[in-house]
Length: 179
Ligand SMILES: Cc1cc2nc3c(=O)[nH]c(=O)nc-3n(C[C@H](O)[C@H](O)[C@H](O)COP(=O)(O)O)c2cc1C
Image (cartoon, rainbow, N blue to C red; front, side, top):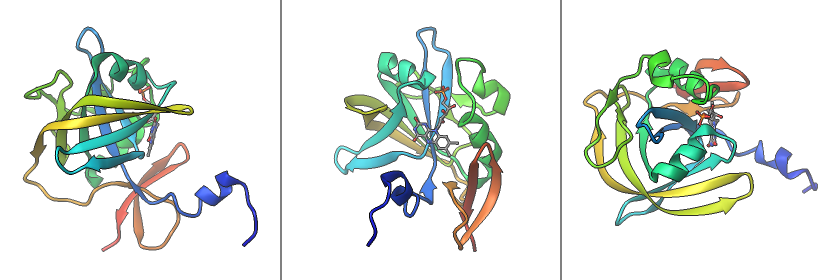
């Protein structure tokens, strides 16, 4: 072994990672979407999901206030929209309008579902942890929705074998497991 910078060591294993979208709302009910690679399941029963959001993100302010979020899982057909969502801030742009994604009313919370996604989980924030420049928000899943269509989930990839790039830009490559 040779000692290396932590940032270099991370690049050896952190990709591929599945990408999710988190939807929140502002005080007026205006929804916003963020793309996230940093997420995990933290409990089976009740089902809980954690997401890590940078403190400078518009979504950080929104989720800190509204304490609810939809965690939506995009398929490969949404590569272009996901890249846009992950590289533009809701401070400056209405991401539902620009990406032509369709907000659907949720059953228990204010943030809307995303119709075009494969799965939507309605979550209420039950805990949060300050971790450096990000905050981990833990959401308890209140109810979940699944689309009838099946297609590969979207990953953030590097240049490793076994993955097909579906869209790239701004230093990101999005793709799916190669058939
Ligand atoms: C593939 C991908 C993965 C990302 N993962 C995260 C993440 O896990 N946490 C985070 O805070 N930002 C992540 N981002 C960056 C945010 O999505 C981005 O800064 C976004 O513009 C923030 O939007 P907002 O200001 O409307 O909240 C990711 C972006 C991309 C493209």
